[in-house]
Image 1 (spheres, rainbow, N blue to C red):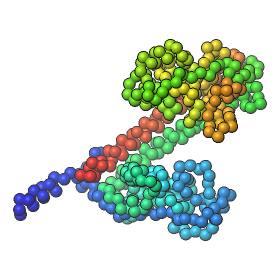
Image 2 (image 1 turned 30 degrees about the vertical axis):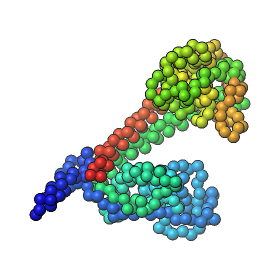
Image 3 (image 1 turned 180 degrees about the horizontal axis):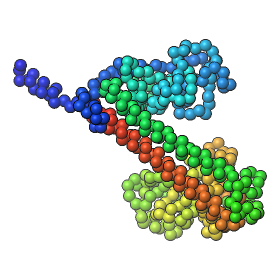
Length: 418
């Protein structure tokens, strides 16, 4: 054997195995994952172009699964004509949209028909369909990023079946799937808990605030049941709608200074800052909110209401306003809860949804004169909000945990490319 051949063989022997960082004990001594064409492990079945003439909204026949139906149930269609039973989907089937979002999902809405531009993942041989779901969750992100650079963002069956990915034995696939499925079950239970709390709050607010045409709420705390009707005024009667002095784009920077919040970043992480000097100057000479006064987004995500926390920050004029409330006739906490119950879409009739100052000032509100009752209602709802936030954080922690697990349970992209 020549020295060149020996060198080549040594390099081949030194090539690292494709193994995940985290492996279950019974597989730690097993061979590395073998790269395979995914078409050997799964079949990608594309949906059928059912003729729209057979569609109906009356529930006749079987429900259709269109691309949009994987993420929403806003408009449900049914198909009542003859069809090929090979396109019938059942609970537990792994589906993936072929346009836009390629994230695979497990269908859990009963027997239905696989319409065009929706694909179904069918395992071949002993391969675990749940494992394939998690594998595709990772690898389809790469396909989605690649197609995002093209004019039309579509997924084809060949893009999935011709892709090469490292695969473990069916036994290890099953173990990984069981682990991640248990986390999914915890996440689903936690999501149901959060949804139940939000539904409870919505129902409670409908009882704690008077309905249209009524002057008293249907549910009142015992100590206030005989205190009479609520006062009816406008927002402009009890407060003023103010905004910050205009900041121009060239007066901001992305790195340092006082946070400058826009619609998309209010309540989150700022992506723009203004100088400390300009902040102090404008704060001293122009309108600026007091701590706990209610901030309101007036464009884009309309009607998002947050209390000003008092920390140094500046806000985009006209798109973010606040209710200047020096008298406290209606407490800031009560105003926050009251405005959180407003249907902002009914505030004006413009095509582009936006809150205008005159509309906001003229908006009718009802409130109890007794400050103690205002505080009682606000405290009840604020404590419920705190519980919702806490449970939502638990859900986010589970999602983070799952993402971390998947990064450990599957070989890294660097290992795959090695």
